[in-house]
Image 1: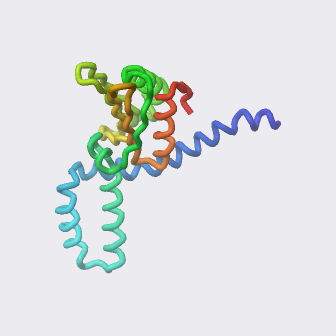
Image 2: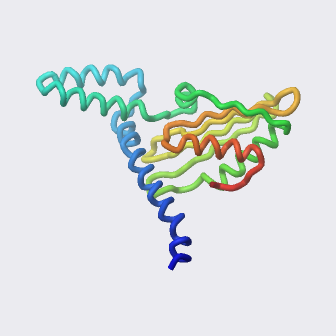
Image 3: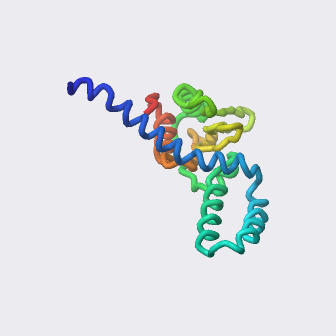
Length: 192
């Protein structure tokens, strides 16, 4: 009986984590899909909504506006949005930037890219710019046609070795995302 429990325990934990993560991501995706506006237009929407809710109780208005602001602020629909929200983590390596790029991009594509559900998939976009001496990588979820970025990385050529600047956010697992990218750059190919 213990052997069976030991065999299914990791799957149960992974399933529970996916269920909780999906439950936390769903409102942000639906909110962005519903309003389809950028943050510079969100203020106008909030002001119009506030005018409509003048007749309702003060507590209800505060709760609704707070929820709306949380939903609208939770997404990064471009890599630049994520970069603006999250402080970078910088690592240096003795290896060439192209080798670090190869390690990170190949492991990320193997471990992350693919369908998550019938309506969502994870995308790994990676581009090497040898003429410019750097590479870029991003990890995002495409859900109902809306993209939410979780990780961005820029790997640059240095005089000796390379430097990788990583940002991870928009998820309760952002520290795990960051840890994974850094360990992949170090040569670890494990998906966990």
